[in-house]
Image (tube, rainbow, N blue to C red; front, side):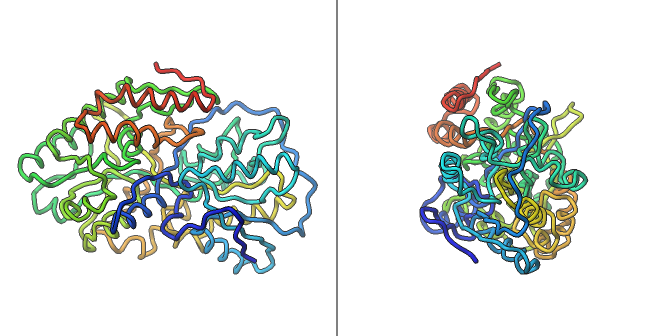
Length: 468
């Protein structure tokens, strides 16, 4: 039986693919559609959590293996839950549609705090963005247990080990794993192979080569672009990949926000040069104006794995057989390459569930079963399921070349130092940096204001902030 909870917001298919959208991009026409897709697909950060073991053993409530489990899911995940029900007809599910944390909603947190006070009402399974896990793995009410149940011990460790390197970092706290990752949005280098071949350009493998190519494009083919910093998630691609400690959780309650770190300033300096010569745009990719005027002139986009289908195919309408993906860019002199992540939701099992077996079986199937994940909208976090996803022609036929090498390489290179915190990492970028760029200021001169905005928001959420 499928129900809709009172007071929740139904989302369209396009607005549910991450369950954590906090985008503010809408205008008219294509902008509305594109913004919905961006909202759906982006916005959950990985976390580098503390790993000291907890002394508190998880104590489940009295179990009832025959009880119905209540599942809260966003609208996009309904088909997945229905598929599970179809393949497990004996399963007893009460499915409730809610907004899944979209647009910064605190509905789940608010309701759980209410349930903590009344002592009942908790759902057994929830689809949630990683940002919700910051509170879900800690008690929301003094003296109460955390909402999320630690899955280590409930789920086979070998299965947890099958997730892409670092992909479960948002789920981990005090040595325990509190969720299972549904999907990834690892950042790769997208490029228009047809145009690159026509112009005689070589796909860069380093940031230094990327910068040099931008200078050539500006000189030889003005009006063409190799990237954009105008979207509300652009920093998650560029600065996250540069290992900029903008959201570096060094302890559970201590956040390092150090935007004068060389790994921040090097990216700001690089982008400032390319913005100045107009090879990198300050206009949002996901805007009607950009798609109409520049979509066909976009040589490259350093962005998430979903850009191929939802940016180039759906928004820019680039014909099939032209777009390809390459590995994340490295920095010359560095032995290890890192990249960013712009999306990905999680499934959480409630610590209050009276039927943990049924709840964990559902979550395990949703995140690891090829029956669902091979045809899922976005790249699965579970590596064996990702292999099946890549073999699905629906996910690969649009592209000029095989996307498998770039996707699988990037999946294991997401930097875990860009941490999952209690607030959106996009607010300060959207409210401080993007307006400054519109006014003609450089990223370099805007770094102090961006740092201050992040720091203020962190302090208001109870973090101790260090800026060194």
